[in-house]
Image (cartoon, rainbow, N blue to C red; front, top):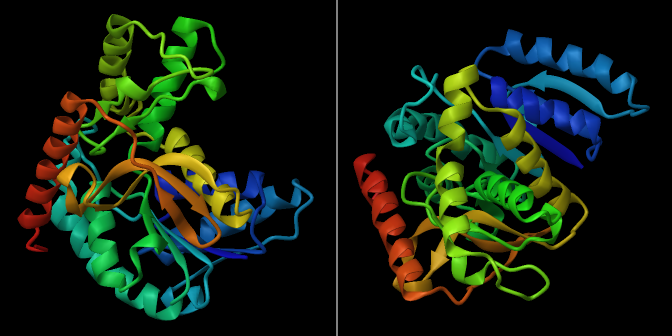
Length: 303
């Protein structure tokens, strides 16, 4: 199993470290615009790996070295600057990064699973499908996975139920139009959450990424572990269901954009997209998210 991580900034390095702590690959390749930064990370991680009783090969390289990767994790991004900057403001510059990297990465690893972490993740997941030429089942974005994890964690504290036992999703755009699918939130098959509780916790969830960024300047650990959930499910063919950014196939009259829906992920990538029974308001929210992502797609001239 060969995993390539493109971009060794705060997020890419955290994902690489998570891969060392949970050594799921035989080879881990780090690719970065600054080769020296990738080389430094590779050396440091190799020493950490020696303490994990692992023989995983860790090295820095370029696109040619990524040849025959099984999974490519794309995290490269321009600097955020203001940590509370809206993700959509990164769209044009980060789209150019994808244009520079994705076609050659895809040509060198034509059978890879491509995981997009860079923001705005929904538009860039859509762009990655176009630029790679991969079938949509092999391109997925982290989407609202971390948002949903945060939502469940806060519901867990409020309800005194373990977060693993709570089925609750944030869906739609990984951005300001995301929404909590309250009508399908449940534990043990029972929908007992008070709407006031869910609304209050959802509002805190939406602002959590911005809050963390304002406090420390960026977010990296949460998204790194969220990415590891996807990697685990691919490597071990676990078929876990998680909210990820995928090409929507006409659900709720939405198509030709990428948004987060509950998605089953295994060794071949996306094995199934779940279509939950959303309320009328939630369907409207999904369509609002689609319109927002479509505007960003058009903004970069991709439409």
